[in-house]
Length: 494
Image (cartoon, rainbow, N blue to C red):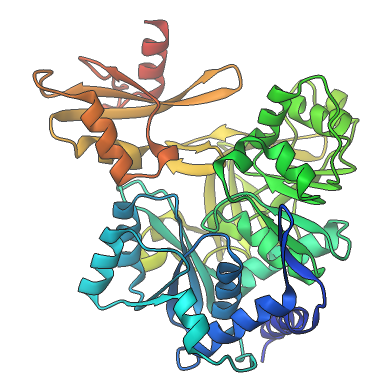
């Protein structure tokens, strides 16, 4: 067993020990609580269900119930690979994901959309409902397999340039290095209450899914749209002590209470996924009075987060010329390079071994015998810390999601009557608006509402443009390629 294998096996033994022995609560939601003992009973049943499966891909479609938390850990403790299916994605998009996984088993704690149930039946994919599992299986005590650092722990999907999602496998070593860094850096306390704001298929979930139980903490899931919109009330009434989200969530609180100083129990603010403005930082430090606020940066392909910066009140003046919090310094285990074009390249133990199906290998490069992942992000170093200055390519970040604009464009062009489409982001203050410029074969009979309905069936809501322009021509640059900047400037000045 290699040193890396030993680290992984120790990590899972420690995690399982908490699940077996922790006496307190593991789940809270407005007064509804569940214990680690209850969670472990669910884990045992899922683990028993999967006893004869090893290194298989197991699909999980669920709400943020105790059942789903138990299923996640049950899958990982059985030595299989967890694949979260987002309940926020339209069925057609999920079917594309399921096809790519080649999985033979789907576990769910809520009813499946009819389209997915039919597809699973046609493809011979086994379906297991958690409530049925709880009544028909006698769970046996969990015995961990021997883990290898290069075995795949989970697969998450990002937007792809071909119009279909792209699967990113993460090995045990890939993500555990990030969790170990968090446990070293962040001042957690025993019994901390961790917010669970984002979807399980958004890789920020890895942060709280593993850090929380390692301190015998409590999950506090966001279950309704009201919880999301009125995040402050959720923080206060569930006594959150560790908050994790994209910065725009805090920006919305600031919009509701711009001059007040709302009281919360939050001690640690873990923000990531999009630019973190100094205006929001000032609100965190002065209004919310968060003792410890951090900015993290990373990508799905690189094991959740690769850079971090611990914020201070001095940042407000020190980084005022930039307007944003730096992404800081790389976390241990992450190697970095900056190209002559200022593109950030990442290497080290957190980089995915390959995309699912071995597609996209051209995204990786070898330099002096070392494998690197070009992030597409422009970075600059100032005063010993790094700042992310935007993108080199056609990829954007919106609400924390990394989106290939070409993915949206391909789907728009699939709609009958569309000849060409170009997508870009316009800004109104701090609000970013996803916009599409569309050239039609003919405007006769074209129905924009039908196009919007089509896109909602094919893509997640955060990828559906909010604004549309019908244009007669789409500008190209001197190389004959679509001039994204040109079309943006043209429409903004129109």
